[in-house]
Amino acid sequence: MERERILVVEDDIALARALGDELRRAHDTRVVHTGREALILAETERFDLIVLDLNLPDMDGLDVAQQLDGLDTPILMLTARADVRSRVAGLYAGASDYLAKPFEMEELLARVYAQLRTHSHGETYCWGPVTLSPARRTCTVDGVPLPLTALEFRLLALLMGAQGRVYSKDTLHERLYDDTMPASNAVEALVSRLRTKLHEVGVEHVVENLRGLGYVIRERA
Image (cartoon, rainbow, N blue to C red):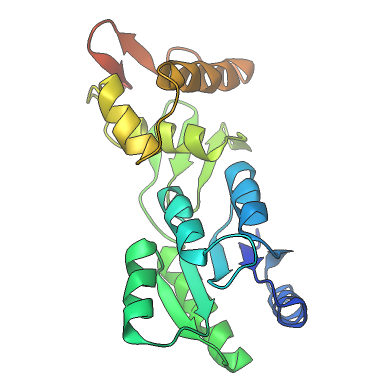
């Protein structure tokens, strides 16, 4: 059985080591110490849970959480900010749960277990040999994992989750890039990269371009 993958983002070296050692007993666990490292890893690898400290040395953990929110990966926030306003801000930023420091390791493990159990099952989208699970952030072709970046995964999940619906370029800009201002051809380039990866594993004609309308994945008969 595949072990769940957990990303720990904690700048306190001693605490990060303790968390990593404890979580590795049952889970495939990566540990980083900055927000930038977390964003890079989350862009290129799949995780089932992110344990995120808010007080990071390079950027505010709330900003990290907001950028991770589109991955559909649950976030357990760790912080010394125990006031109600901070907890509410964390939840609005995308946290699934919130644990104030200092905490007992048993409570953290219980919350990790609860988050993994809650998010372990979810809807799965299928199109021919392609199977995608938003909850687990996995995409396979004939059972073989297909490596996708976070944006590629979000695009494919959006289109596969609403097969038959046409998404305009402007709508995809809004849904995929939030408040950022990507290049004018960002969506076209993203679709092209996704098509290339699918083509390399023998899957064709998944994402269609309807000239003047947008992009769609049609339901298969």
